[in-house]
Length: 333
Image (cartoon, rainbow, N blue to C red; front, side, top):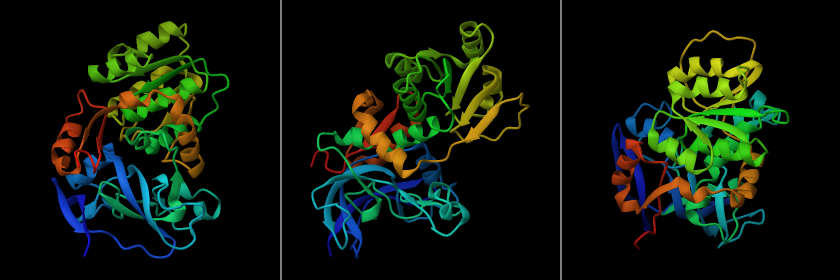
């Protein structure tokens, strides 16, 4: 039996590199040899044992890219040797949203790396129709950012941007920074971004944004907008204090897009507040097309080989001084 190395969630606070069988593929499936896989904030909840759907043993990872090693059945144009990423959503096809063309908000939505084995391994088995081709010259570290970039593409599509002059992004983690980059690519020049961590504010500043410490954000935005408030705000921190602060930063009839997850009751003025959940397949395709024009290399703090996944996870969990930690299974091979 052929085996491979995989990052396995084995129970609360138990993550380890393990040898497991290489998955066998069936008709309509592909075996993808992983080139790079990034950690996501949701992996923190999985490894902590608090994610309600992620059950051990499980190979984590849903932000990945690789090369098609094997393919069986109808390939939809996908061939062995192609560089690909995966649209990692698994929809039921039967609920109201699936029947009405919105499978990304399926009532029983599942994902690779949460509900089924993901891509933090040497190989992963995937449906061929979940694969999206990548440019041959896109570096693996960058290609592994397509999933979070798709989140930002989708979030910024949730509100009209034609008349937006001033935008605020709360949270300068990967999703917040990518959201700010997508906004700038769509013509928004006046973008304020805040985070409690000075290292993340420094990265936002490096990318050319106005980075502000959260206690000073309201003053900065009001001064820049003659006390009117921002036109649109993207909440990407998922922090309880942001739930109250965000309503103070937006003008009357402005818009708030909630990409983070927080639990806090707030009093609202007359605003448009919309949710944003994952992405559509088109968002993924748009992210791949947009990626070459964005300075994504600065997002990758460090790469680790798969054997060092525990050390990599601890570095990622530390947060300060970290944007993206990437596992490259063939690093040092």
